[in-house]
Figure 1 (cartoon, rainbow, N blue to C red):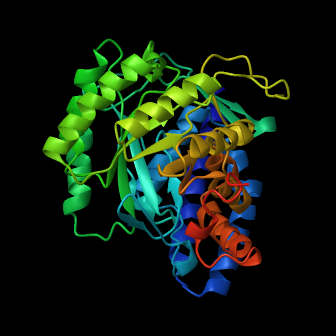
Figure 2: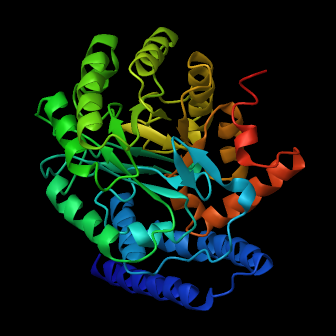
Length: 396
């Protein structure tokens, strides 16, 4: 109804002003004040902001979140990083191990805004060589009761050229990025895989702190077939060759699915180790549907993420860590919303951890809250640095 749309419009404007006000008053860098801000901010978000955002369809809410970050209307984490969270992975120093997963800032529109929320790194994308609209709408669905999301975006992308220019401007802006920038590479829907990924590596090598080859989205026809041994060997051989020629110092990672059998997972790990990829992102969304799901949209086609994916992804992280002998750095993804979630994935074998879907439920103050919780968990278990906890559960 028109009246409802008008009410929503004013509510969204109000949200922007609230978020903007939060940025203005959040100027203290004292740890105690920082804790109060992140905990109070999280509660305020859940009680007042989330009810407003949830009036919109999920994709519109996502676009609003990106717009807020792009325009500096998201919270800024001003508290100094805990040295215990600093970690060196594939030759890169990370101020903390928490990153923003691909799928949030798909087009590289709000890198500074998201990074300022407290993340140690941002993964932009997936980016395809040519612009493409992705799948038909609606293509994103909330499972609020489950703290989950189902999406079938299908690599909607502004295209490599536009994203390249945007990220080049970020690099040349002179502003401190505060963290590492990763770029997640995809393929166009009807294109051949190897030429598209090779193009992506050539295009973005000069801008990225590391690159991720995404072969595990369930929403692009035939993409997951690239995880089979023969296909994977051909792809990795091609992208590693061009990486070594054009940007040899840029780490190259492969992102895998959580729905692989043990034998498929073993083959992937053998190929990754043999061909010396620099790391793996574990995992993408799942096409499975746990019987415990309650959300009305649970039967929608697409990849399921959020809390229902948490334990599944952690289990795959542990398996990959063991299969690679702990020698291949892993980025753990899936269902992260608390410091305990991050800690569990690190203990399972992840060197870095990303969040995205539960950011919608936990709110923009959650990164500093997660880091605070993680710091206390490390201290309680007697670890001096986050690196000391990597894989401790998988080694048992």
